[in-house]
Image 1 (tube, rainbow, N blue to C red):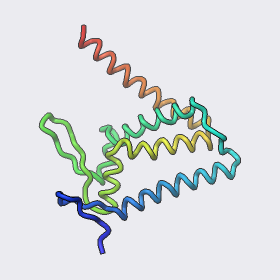
Image 2 (image 1 turned 90 degrees about the vertical axis):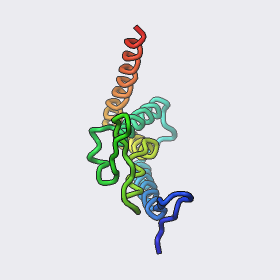
Image 3 (image 1 turned 135 degrees about the vertical axis):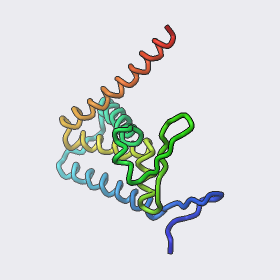
Image 4 (image 1 turned 120 degrees about the vertical axis):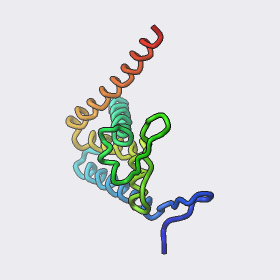
Length: 159
């Protein structure tokens, strides 16, 4: 009995059992880490706005790096098929079925990867605040740099 469900109007299958396994892995990992933080007595009453902004910005940048950057293509390669668009850009689509397809969909979706990366930063701040804040700061600084590059190019194009 297959756990894949046909998608209306397409030949594609939705690997629901694999999605459930990924959700279980996320919830089990995140929940386990929260229990570990609570056991250490480090569960904060609330996170500071600074830590939320740091985790959110760093998680956003890291998720974009994992899901879209060329340098992380080897991480995605076992789970995607690469094609070239008409304008020479590369496009990645999940390959296979079942777990491979589900992981391919996860690792090509910045919002999906963002759940994992942001959760890691949030738990990291609770468990290992100094090292996590330092690590997250690298990704935040890189995100700021990205915006400065865009602004610089835009100002040069207008000149």
